[in-house]
Amino acid sequence: MNYLKPEQTYVALLHYPVYNKHGEVITSAVTNLDIHDIARVVQTYGLGGYYLATPVKNQYRLLAETLEFWQKGTGKEYNPTRSRSFDQTKVVSSVAAVRKELGKNSLWVATTAKKRPNCITLDDVRDWGERHPDRNTVFLFGTGYGLTDEFISSYEHILCPIEGGTLYNHLSVRSAATIIIDRLFGR
Amino acid sequence: MNYLKPEQTYVALLHYPVYNKHGEVITSAVTNLDIHDIARVVQTYGLGGYYLATPVKNQYRLLAETLEFWQKGTGKEYNPTRSRSFDQTKVVSSVAAVRKELGKNSLWVATTAKKRPNCITLDDVRDWGERHPDRNTVFLFGTGYGLTDEFISSYEHILCPIEGGTLYNHLSVRSAATIIIDRLFGR
Image (cartoon, rainbow over all chains, first blue to last red; front, side, top):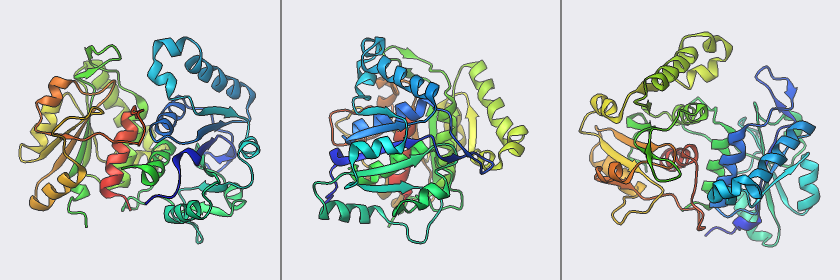
């Protein structure tokens, strides 16, 4: 029995603060397939929403225009199915904007590919959902080389990384988000 | 207990014969993130291999050059982790070439987003793996709008589609492959 409700579960993809491959803190560029792939998973599993966050003005505008194309513009006629995948997608400037919408009562879960000593499991998240049936859950994902340690450490709840049974552990953020949502709500 | 062995499990991504959005049979163009995302999942879960198949000569060459860049060229120095994700990746011209390498004794499983009356489940695949511990399993995925009905029908084993609990069912091929591999070998 799954006590977490998909419609009360949210995904936020943050383009800042994340690492680049040299371990420097950057704002990553928006990637078209991050928008599409995760939006399609969010829609397929009936989640509450998908937030795309970037503080860079022209990237924000690019995202807003892309979404408008699909939600209202030519894209809607061109491909109604693709258009529908964006019903739950929103562009915001930062995680603070997501927090403003979803409130402090939500369970905020930061994700990372690095194992933290006190990380929580998806079973822990489900238990929380059972104890708080009226509250939302928000999963935070980072693009690039992942959310910074400082950012991650500012969250009480950090999800244990996905393990594939090998020493190689470099999934795309698209794959990681897909797996977490499927493990929670698939089947 | 999972009887299927990851190192005996293969993924093939076919760019032909697939549908476009009008239901016409086409050869789809190679997409960069299809190469990367699925290769990273294959490597993370320790699968036997990942075949990228296209019959179009310049697309084949593009793929071969991309792989060579990562496997041997500048990409290996630039990003060794990314390079390693391609250890198990190969370019071929068609599914026939994959068949030549993996043989007729393998279990060939075609995938589609459309539900077929006699589709098999991942439990069926696991059972088969238990009964045939020395044989390979190959999952066939189509790009674009999916493998054609005619192609799918030529396979005895067709996997039941992933269901997310809503009427919307339009995952990217990257997400679909990720989910199937995680369901088989994750945790």
